[in-house]
Image (cartoon, rainbow, N blue to C red; front, side, top):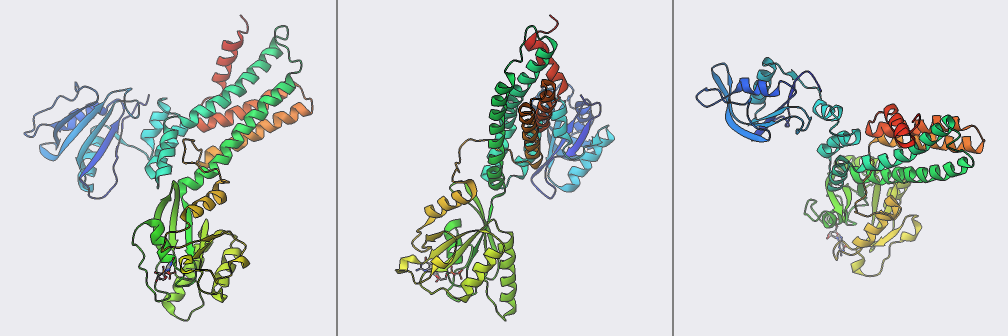
Length: 458
Ligand code: GDP
């Protein structure tokens, strides 16, 4: 447990209805006691305030009342940090919050560093590392998927998967150690082949987690999608249809959508960040020129381009320019052959090497095909808005890859018929890489397991 007491403003800066100051550590309740009074300045009893209860009162700076507040007490270990914690809900102005924060410091707290409350929750063993990291993910989640996944991680979803993998590894390591120490009772005869099976299974589980992480990353960040096409093909109409709101103004005058409009949508669970750009074309018009350059820029940055053609007009130079741009940047692309409600197509979409969907923004045709195609392009067709928990942190993915690398070395050692102690080195590497994901100590766990499971030294 920490010796010092930390304090910070826990809510966003700027004027708001309420703001919260959080204090955590052994002196949290004492500090609150020194600041809380009744309206007329009489002391309130905070020292004996039961855990998880709220008290109404006033913060005083000497004789001067500073703000009217609600004070919540959480006693260790039943708090976010597992330490004594106090939350002061005051009015949300920056000045008030800073003033109260400085009073807590004067009473003995120190200003918390970013993330320090969560770090304490981890150090005090209340949450594992993936859970700690997911707290940040929940706070910054930009869509429903990201929020849901971060919450699953926070509830221990990744921890459980990693624990199972590590259990598998430690079991084998412990067996090898035991057999080397006590060959009379544990035989390594034919063990290499058995170990290989176990490792291949572990590798396939880790591989699955890594593969899912790509999907997870895409889902977490949303698919940056640009609707590109020459003027008047129906880009704004498609954007409106997909986003379900009238954000882009649809007109019949070519080139009127000059600004890039952004909307975030969920296409049956697939998060798309839609950019609607002005048509790409060579033009002398200054304003439009900027639009053209911008849309090139957006194509360059996009994960997916919805290249829109007007089925009622023949394919021309302007379409080809956009096509070339998409190819030049090597983008994933789906062609929307729009306005098919007007009859058979005269546009020559077969000359483009991207999947084509017959579409009509007006009649709302082609949306389910679009969703299916996006699923194929981004999730190898395996998208489900189901309950899988995804590893999405770069650090965690790197550790998974390193763990897989170490396990492959074990297979190599088996194939090269090296002695068993070579296996354990790489097995333990894999074990500790996986441990780094959840922030668990390596050596103690190994010894605990060896003694518990194999009763050496009886
Ligand atoms: P943009 O310049 O590419 O953004 O095109 P708009 O969305 O402004 O559409 C240009 C015109 O085509 C408007 O008059 C739309 O109503 C019309 N339009 C768009 N999509 C369709 C469609 O699917 N069918 C028909 N018949 N007209 C459409």
